[in-house]
Image (tube, rainbow, N blue to C red):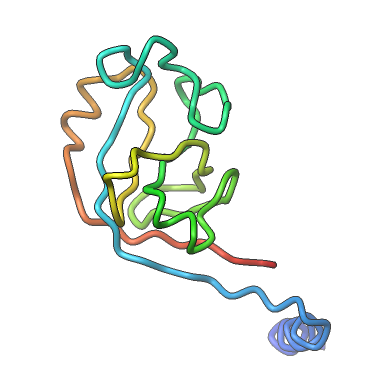
Length: 127
């Protein structure tokens, strides 16, 4: 059996079983944040859902309007221009819309250099 035919059969079976996985994408404003008291509160390593952030983690915070689109706690997200996946482990203040913050550990300089940019994010709603 040819590999391409095998993929078609598997995708057809997944669709038949009602398990189709649709990838979503969205252009958002992305900024960066760190685990420093100047940017957060007296518990700079604790995210809004209670996760403990550590330098080196591939994590993002999302604006609350994005949670309704499926970017909820622990959702995996790809960011165009970055390798690998990030996990949604934090949520932002209610005032932000259509925005993510990329976690940069304690590297304030790196976060400042990143600044604010438009990025495309991808995630799958597999429910």
